[in-house]
Image (cartoon, rainbow, N blue to C red; front, side):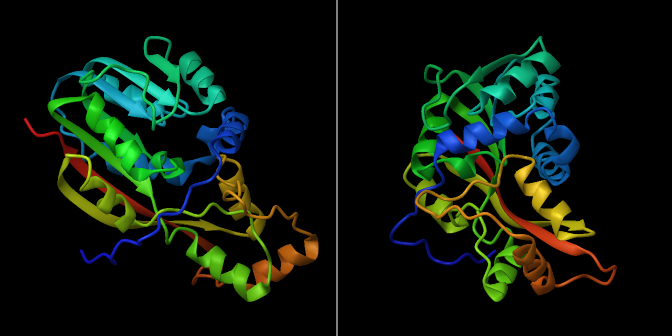
Length: 266
């Protein structure tokens, strides 16, 4: 798969406090709304070898439903999330699993603590891809494996194009490119067994449902330094009119996801 060359200047992701607050607020309804996130996580989990491991870590565990799947192959499993509300929800859902509030760029475990690291739709909130991957490398045993699914630039393409066409400002996070992540990987000492860029699409009857699916899972915060602007009914109508519909008359929202299979050399 061909990827564009990495940028010389890597952008900063959105403010983490904002992300944590929004995801905490979404914790109670997350599993009901996050359908495409569940599809992406399921695709990432399908790439995890179904053989026993000693210790596994889920970075960006959310409500814990995918951490629970890891616990089926691991003797001990831990989940970490930036949002305290998600951690509390996960602990209620799966009391036998250890969940921790923390930052993927400063993992609160000693080096070589895990045999397996999993993360789906979480690392895109990091400020520095190299820092996040270096932390994954640090907490992995030599010979350990990481399976990552990271939302990258190219996501929400339909919404972004419609926003420009309609002249409407939206609070959508800016994202690192796939090439940013691959360039960062080359500086961490991790080897990758495979990488694949995959588009996952969701369909909606109207714009309100589409925007709710983004905001309802905590992903509607604006990038650092971006202007916050409320949307009027007129602006929403203009935005919806600018969006194409598929053959079934539905609006499409696409997530571009980098799947990475990584190994720490022996």
